[in-house]
Length: 67
Length: 216
Image (cartoon, rainbow over all chains, first blue to last red; front, top):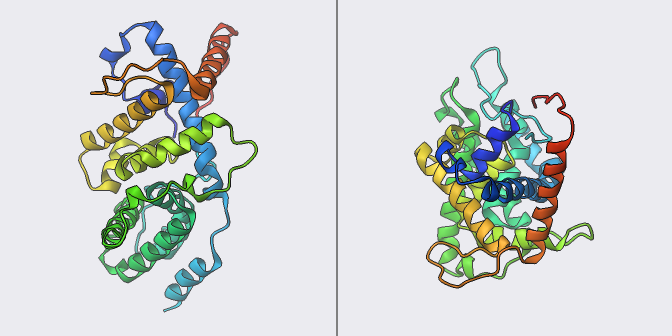
């Protein structure tokens, strides 16, 4: 989680040093798409992670813990 | 990039001292729910999948080796359960032919057209590509962690994320995919326009005076 933002962009885009040299014209839309994609996916999935855990699931784990 | 729930995937469950098996399992639940949704594309099925995976994990807890990567162990159980459920379900219905349910989430007003397109295209990706992309982009996992969680080579994990990203870019930005001879207009549609606006923001930020970047 402590990686620089640029490294993370490359992770998602799968770019390597060689492919970075394709030219600035192509790199800008790629980077913009990566940022947009990351934001979009967070919008799609962050709500789920924030939702409270269903109590029956927690009960299941607690019952097993007490065994 | 950071997820709002900072739960370490590489929690070390030890027999003495560190978090117990049950504590680690409870702490991992929000991330398991995200991962389950990325596989099932449906909220109700995702909840069922997490419950089934937790039941399997509790039954198999003796087989977990303390000191190893608990997150990867749990993700593997979740994925294996998803695969076996899907196989069983395929006998009656082909999931990929099932109607798209936009991740079974009611459309919200703030959902832009571009985001709706992203949901639709995410649903069309193969489950493993979708799951790998979410692990890296949303959960902030490294390729090594993704490989451990999916039980595959690091190169395979990289390839899944790369392909998912390329497919989404091609479909959403109107670029022809590999092997797709159809000529499409680049830069058309709501995603291209949203992405261009991100690009403009980035250029403006480039021109702004440098600021100190904080790690996450």
